[in-house]
Length: 196
View: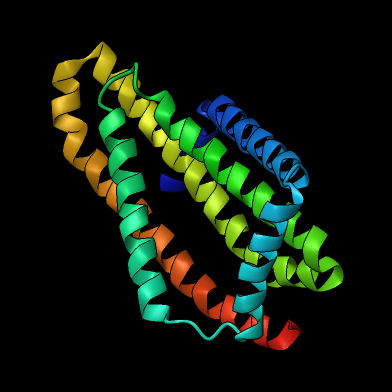
């Protein structure tokens, strides 16, 4: 019964997932174009920064990285939940998805251009696995936020009844993002040591 409801929910909201994926893909495309347009001075600064990280063998404070990720994820989920209270501010969720795509496209394009084969190995071993988990989570979160925004717009009484369950779901998304970031911080460290 639960599985059937989940399938129905996914089927009913398929257009949202398609739109969200297109926004993410456009973000990646624009990000990769932006990385190609970086001038020589900026490229040198970025390359020196990334080289310093790679040459350190990924020896960074996992606690500090995780703490920062937890705070950033909280800001993201909080802002998405807040803007979902009103239909007119709802597009913020999709903008964050586009920005995530942009940062991924820029980072991937720059690393590939600067470190070629080793950069590709790093991206496939460290970045891609986390993206394959984070992307569905982000798209699902956008769908949940959009549904709640429409509900808030159409029926304020029902919004008051469902706001607690909505916030609990958003809390689960926050936990999901944090778990992925914790795993990625350790995988990245091992990947750097093994590749560079």
